Length: 411
Image (cartoon, rainbow, N blue to C red; front, side, top):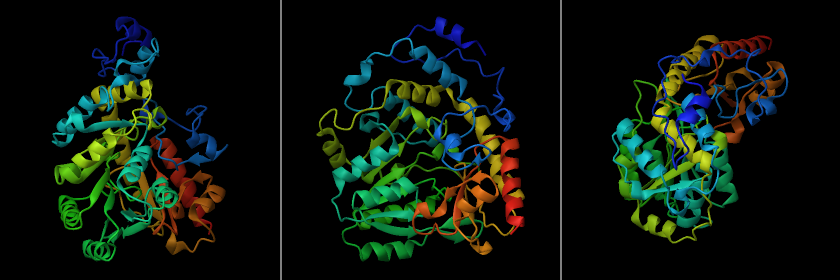
């Protein structure tokens, strides 16, 4: 791989920077699995600083892997000109729209219309904007639970009551009861929105075509707007596959996504929404131009580089994550319930059979020196659970699982 300085010199700063000459063949391993607790180095981000000295962080959805070289080079190259970008006057998504559409077509066979894409700073903002524009306080939103904790907070703070769609154990995976959801929707006339998180966080379930078709039929029957958070789509493991909900119900679906999860870019603040329903597009277009802000310049450059040039790095990451999701199953004691996820780098761990004296995450932080995400923060269905982030190297993952197993063995 050429040095960053050589790459910068060879590519004068333009409105977009695509390092077409980037050669991954020499560094295809990227050293991602070499990290140890001794070499991971000082980390300034939330994940490590919140954990504290001596605690292995396995909580917030950040990876431990270093940034993909193609993305780092794109950011460095753009740093020579941090003025207003040309695309700032674009009321929608600037250069992101075409690249998003290209990625959806090549990876998922979805012919997304670039003209329907709008840029946001992150998926949380996009969700709140769409709920603000399409629902009123007091109107319920259906969502699978347990659910990503900021979404739970959003429903509460915006006064959009949650119509819970429980995820329940189903053999080696998770499922939900379509008939129960149909009955609940019939009994909730003020619910006109479904938030579909697919792949699902925290269970890691990638919904099947049959499940998505059933949801589409319910959305038609009950006149639902579907807000589809598909941010974990690129982290789906074979033989599971990701099916964009917009391929089933294009005129009722708003799709949220971002490069931040698959490429570990949470701090760059950049996401997109593909707004399928014409009426919702019109409502969004009628808002004041600067009311909801826009993603920052480096966030856009990082996303463009990720979606155009980051897949060799992502392939290596997926191989490590695939191994790690199985390592969790192999090394945790049988007393901990765990279903190997179809997607994401998150394990939803069931500690209810252990009769722990407190929230499992608090117990493990103190007794194992491993920090997980607290299950109750994920809303209904979270009590007795904790979420494990396994996006790290083999040595660090092995040490974290050893600590957890030892702490549980001492009970």
